Image 1 (tube, protein in one colour):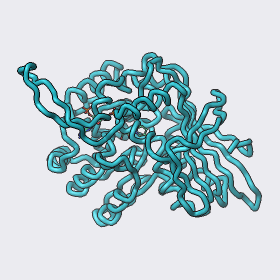
Image 2 (image 1 turned 90 degrees about the vertical axis):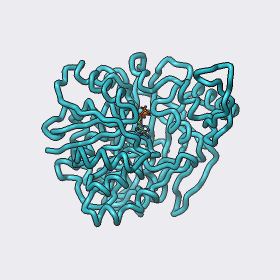
Image 3 (image 1 turned 180 degrees about the vertical axis):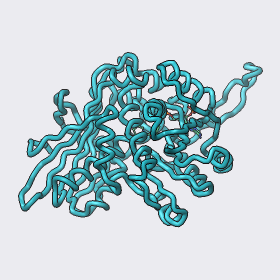
Image 4 (image 1 turned 45 degrees about the horizontal axis):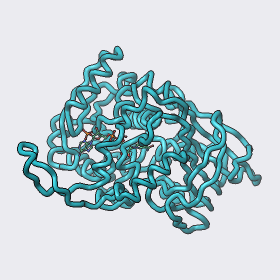
Length: 412
Ligand code: NDP
């Protein structure tokens, strides 16, 4: 049905690749390209070792370089490019897609390297160009962003005339048995968590200090967990697409130990994203030194556990969902839609932990929606711009079943 090129060979890409080879009726040709081709080849080997006898091409590309991307896209000619590299590469990949007539999907919105700041404006600015080229770009098709928007769209379509209060709640109650580790790319993760909080209330955005507001929320099959209000990108598109929303917030759980380490990292200056000069020994003559500029957070990433290696000893589960209050047929209702995902189930299937799994499966499902022609319309779109029903059905069948609670106590 379609030829896809996936960029990236990290945790999320590994899960997406496993899911793509489980659906070869839709994904008929598949290439994985990343910074280091050895990593792509290792991923292909792990897929073959699990018994999937599928032909997968690999290639090396620096996705910061539009010319390299264009050369690759022109030679492989994919119908769809799935961007599972880092948010820094979103715009270069979108530029190359436009130049080569390829459609586009990603899981995280663009972030400049030198500014820990994320918003959709940079990518929404491509809307006209994609529309004129007759190409589809699907933004933020992981879990959150991604499934969180499909859940909201599903609630709006089936259960509410007006959504008024929306809380996206993201709990990871797993334990990887490391003193400190992040569940996805450490650089991106720490940049996100150390930012100021932001939520929407009565037509205004309200800023908070980082992790200033928190409270216990109870998650299904898990219990109460301290949950912190954070800024999250999908709130920006959801309040725009559902103007009846009076309040929209995003909550994520963190354990005490994680926060203590994070505090130390910040106090030591290791979360800095500006360059510092370091006098390093020369590789071929360690008695001599050379001045190099390093970004402390990038250095920290090099010494922290790789999120891809956490799966084996990870127990417990994640629980992510949307808690919604609004009006249906003149009456107030509440609605909670969520998925729980066990880290060990994700590991058994793909060798990755649950956070990579809950992101990689929706990326494959969104790509499937595009290739089947269900989510295909020229322009740049967020997940809630499309019909949620077929997407949620695929999630049910592909390892992320969802559950609903009607008129329960939302605790919010
Ligand atoms: P990883 O760091 O594990 O993987 C990133 C991959 O991109 C690596 O293979 C890396 O290659 C490759 N890469 C990095 N820079 C370049 C470049 N310039 N050119 C080519 N390839 C490059 O990250 P994750 O898998 O944890 O995360 C992937 C994406 O998913 C991120 O954008 C993250 O923000 C997003 N995400 C979204 C979530 C959601 O729910 N929506 C949740 C979690 C993550 P190498 O290692 O060889 O440098």
